[in-house]
Length: 236
Image (cartoon, rainbow, N blue to C red; front, side, top):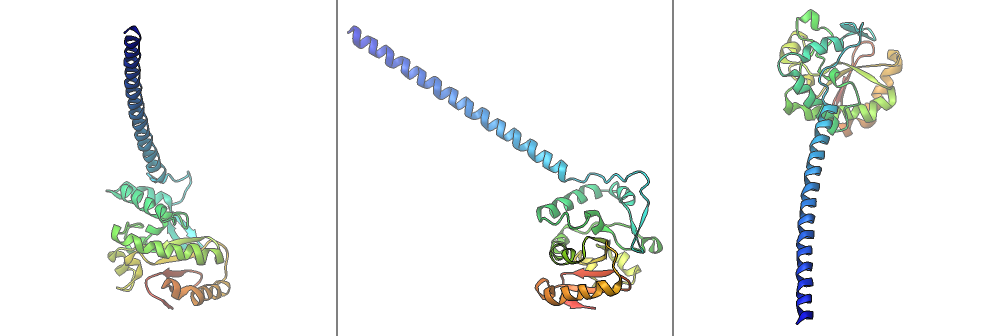
């Protein structure tokens, strides 16, 4: 009987230990889940802060207007004031994140995509404007053409006209079917020094061999300013 009682006590102790181990294991699992959730929230918050432009702070001495190879372009100083209006800062943060997700946020400075044109002062129109969210997808393809076909051939580029409002486009004498109104077209200037005679053959060669593939529109203006979009295969 003594042996049986001792065995029962040991069995009871073992069951108690198992219960404690299960309880401790459960508590440890809960603690790990809470830690993972907290870490995930912190990581997401950090990611949002990294991707959010908040406000472009221009360097001291930054001019209001840049001279981009002879074309006037509103600077970060003007853009920083634009971000303070209404919901522009939040919308621009979302646009930057959208470009980042699609891996085209480094093709050109994102704020350049919102430049309406070179003659905003003469037209008495805002230098910058933000397109509706439903138009953002079209710009991804145009930026990919720059990224994969144009920049490798001519080097970095600067956007002097991107999205345009109907008001700006009308005053500027733009076509009612302008691709700028769909956030699909960009007017661009190469950052490297090119003569027109050097630049035009390269652009035409790109359009000839890659244009159909990208449904690419190419327009070459006077000087070294040119237009690119992916909303209709054509050239002018």
